[in-house]
Image (cartoon, rainbow, N blue to C red; front, side):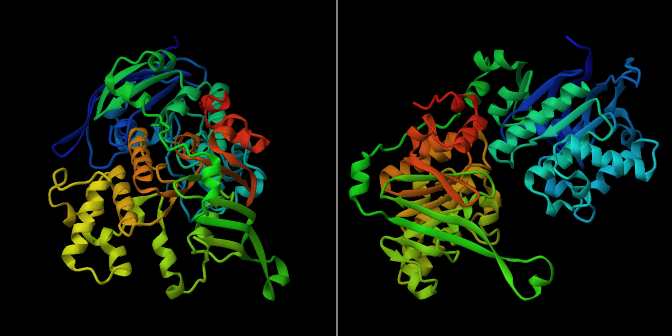
Length: 551
């Protein structure tokens, strides 16, 4: 095995009296890819960021011995990063140890172009002119696969796509050829195909440069595909570590087994196709088209607007008690399709709810709003932080059943909260609490209760589990499956997670560039995709999907 690059010994991190990382010891070897995995709150990000003292107001103890090499490849004396002054650490950050942060939109400065931000890092650590730093920044953008790097170097972060922003972050992290790269959930916000591209890029750059990578993630598919070794954290403690193949095939700790067993399980009522088609569909779309106005370039833009077609000629039916999954990459049109189904986006063609079209008039559409409800991707942003649980969940009743008394509304709120697994016994004073007092999975249960309180027939689920850890994701999917069986609900599921599709969907439509490329029964389509784009999506999702292991 190669020499040790970073030797972390008995690391402790505390905020006030609360210790969040307890006695972590791990080693990272030169040229190694180590994955640090665990659920949110396990302490994995705090562990990595504390090595460079990037955690404000944290009390850190232990040792972080960094044994780098000089430009000739000779080993340097070991330095304890935790004992370095802030000024000394500035010479380490970015040069010897670099970081790729989880969300590039917040990590990149919106006031400077990406080229300027990369060049700034180069100028800070290397003796070069501004022109030389800019030339190297453009070269780095080209190495990370960004098209037209000279032009994109002058772009601001908001002018790049999610995948391009992440590539720009990687270019910045690699600007001074670090020996250790800390990658904090670098692919969480990306589609499966972009995720695969970023992983391949990191692997290629890591092999070419011989650097070590510490990958912080909760995505076990990513760990299988990328890492050499894995370290598992639970509640601030390192519970297991070893080679990926060994740990995954024979996990020793119960928490590791729990993570590995958290893949969604299919548990839906498999209705015969004939039965589904005999009943009238709850949602039906024919020749559905959605377009947006866009400015035209040049002088024409002064007098006329162009149109961007987000959804073109879509057609689908959603029957009672069934789940229709819409999959595709960002920009494929799936979220726009969901907005049209909710009556929140004007469209051309035909789209009806229980045979009734959207009129886009509040009084005429009010009965349909009761039939179709929505659960958004991020409950933390979709739930008002100023409303209590009782106010949030009861809001639909105030609109659709204003005749109910306060006591009747409260009884209905308590009942639906119990149905989604939240009770006063678990959470004393539950009705008076606020969303920030709950975990991500619990907030998603609140969002479900809020939608279910008026007894809808259709739920539009917009990436309902993508922001959740694997164990919480499995719990929420099990709850959705139970609610569908008990209430006969229909789901329009918007997702890019093929595991979720396999667990939940009866039928699937695949979208790319606003068009439906392929549709059919979920398991048949997953096992035998006909379109090349669908095969690309499935092969990018995981090895199991690529092999068709969806029985």
